[in-house]
Length: 292
Image 1 (cartoon, rainbow, N blue to C red):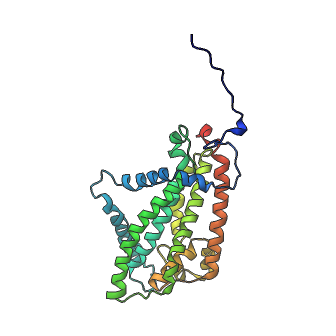
Image 2: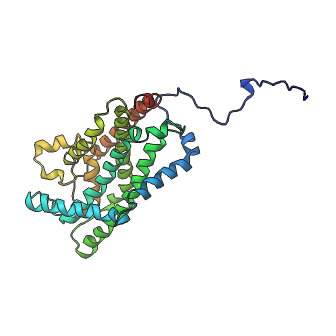
Image 3: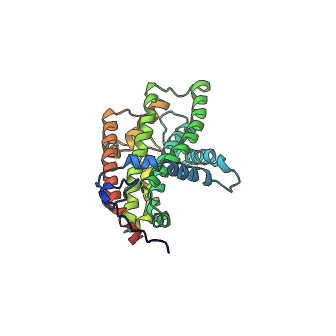
């Protein structure tokens, strides 16, 4: 008979764990180091979102260009011709394409992140990974789609600038990356707040799409702020998206209202919303599997 080996117990204090998973953490914290360790998973989620959206479709990636063009043409016919809404002297196709391009990025980020918990409850319940990776992957994949549509917008924009010479851009185009990041921050913040609330109030899932549509008409996407009566213009600036759209149009189209105070207001709103979103997300992620 082999001699019995006595089990040796190593004190917990002497064990160096590779990873510690805890149910409690600071409410306002984001563990960027942990997200970086799971960067391969983040890339995998981003690739899934970008590649599989138009998989097994007839036009495939061409939908990235078809959707904004068709939407811009419909808006030009309905709002520009039938309703007679002014575009401030900017060619209708270019004006609506500009608004739709940046609006699609915001709405896609908001809609996709607002379904993070409900759409991925099965994954969350089976394996551990930083929960913040999923909403971040939605925002990053939406950014890649935006780059494709923005490149198409630049082609159309260049035609009107150098051939038609009907628009006059300016140096404020240099802050376009800041505007894009700010819009992504607001969309991501609102999305994670909504997805955290849908774990308990599932009705919000049905209201998000409707609410986003209303928000589009409450933002200067299909009309310039200057076309509104003065009593409504002041109300419009309470929308943190207003200064982003107006600055974007002012920079690329030479038509819009540049408001430094509005940009500061939008930035503050974006930061406050993001902090609130992190707070709500961290509070809910520990228990959402029991309620979804």
